[in-house]
Amino acid sequence: MTIWERILDAATRLANGESLGTLLGLSPQTPDGGRDGEHPGLRQIGFTVGVIALGAKMARADGEVSEAETQAFRNFFKVPAGEEKNVERFFNLAKRDVAGFESYAKQVAALFPDAPEILENVLEGLFEIAKADGQIDAAEADYLAKVARLFGLDSSRFERAKAAALGIVECEPCVILGIDPLATDEQIRDAWLRQVRANHPDRLIAQGLPEEAIAMANRKLALINDAYDRLRRERGLVPAE
Image (cartoon, rainbow, N blue to C red; front, top):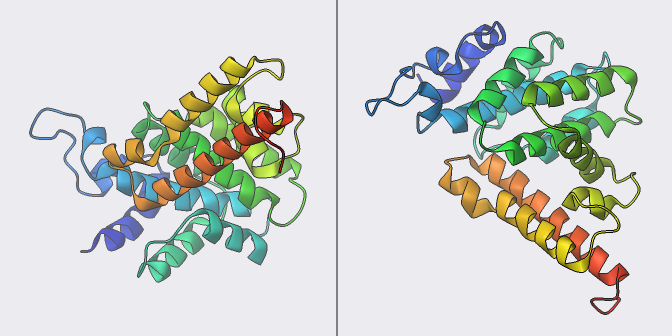
């Protein structure tokens, strides 16, 4: 059985709260005594399963799944070459209703207790799906807030994901960098460096994350650099274009 066949077979049972490691045939304890969350392939599998399911259920949150929402998912989640049909099948299975999203969110959060930036990037992608067919409605806003809580993300990370996706907040670059609009030039630079280190692809590759997660990190890194450049231009630290 291929990994995608195992994922599809596990999909409905995972939504009922069973362990991802158990469903995919991974031992709850590795030979060196680690937990199943430390299995070398579990983060990759868990990320793929969780993000597809949460994306599909985000698209369903307002009652209907539009083509715009489906395309937004494709743009945000880079499907591995050759796996398009498997991803589509799983997406269609997950989008039947919103039920079960809490279990997926909890499973993903449990896999990344030390990488909140990954969870923040996933939330940003969900915002992208929510806005794809127009204004975010009450049901979609409620879904996003609940996923953020299940991810354990604080309000600053929630607002940064929202700003990165929607770009409608005051001093958007400040929100993305996580600083006060009155921050000093040195504080801005320090915040920029922190965000770059947290989202650098090399760090995520070292954690064994899949290409889809790296693609999200690259996009966030571009946003972080753009926010830093905009603030520097506003302050006259670099020549205006």
